[in-house]
Amino acid sequence: MLSKEHAATIDRMSQIRAVLFDFGKVLTLAPDPRVWEQMRAIAQLSEAELQDGYWKYRDDYDAGILTGDEYWRLIAGASISDSVLRDLKAADVALWTQMNEPMLQWVASLHQHGFRTGILSNMPDAMAEGIVAQFDWIANFHYTVWSYALKLRKPQPEIYAIAADGLKTPPQNILFIDDKPENTAAAEAFGMQAIVYDNHADFVTEMHARGFGYLLEPETIASV
View 1 (cartoon, helix red, strand yellow):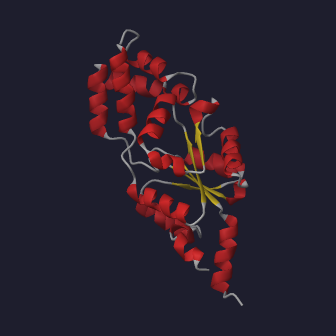
View 2: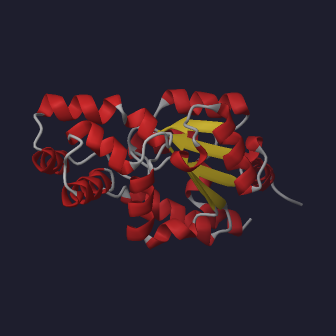
View 3: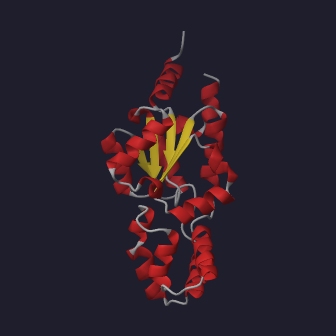
């Protein structure tokens, strides 16, 4: 006969069958300020000019309304050369790809122990292409959703439906992790479980508080 503890663990296992991750500031750390300065030098823009243009057009870039070339020409000028375009797109990838090693180690453990995993990220074309080309571990995820390819962005509800369908998992059995509360709120409204990621220590605390601590050590589940 199962103990109450083992029975509770099995019950939790039936609740969460897949973990869905945002990319930037979840699987990776905050943007690298050194790369931002390199990007500003490449674009030959002041800090205010780059800040204004980078964020002014970013939603349309993430949503696939703008291509990488169109986005950077709006920011740095229509006459910039192809080599400058290439360098700006490469720097943008580098800006957002300081790896969050504790999260990547956890992802690997989830894969090893049979959990389905996915990425749901507001991500433009050149960024997604650069990330996939640079990091072969992206292919280990069972499903990836890049916003530009769908012409949708978080927190639009349709994008969560596509992610759940791709993971072949009911929304209530998916845990979604994102750094923006508006995105986790939309996931919860769709029916997923969700946690806001700010830093790893607080994340671990929140996982335990929410009853998801067992997911952090999936090897213990295999022995149940």
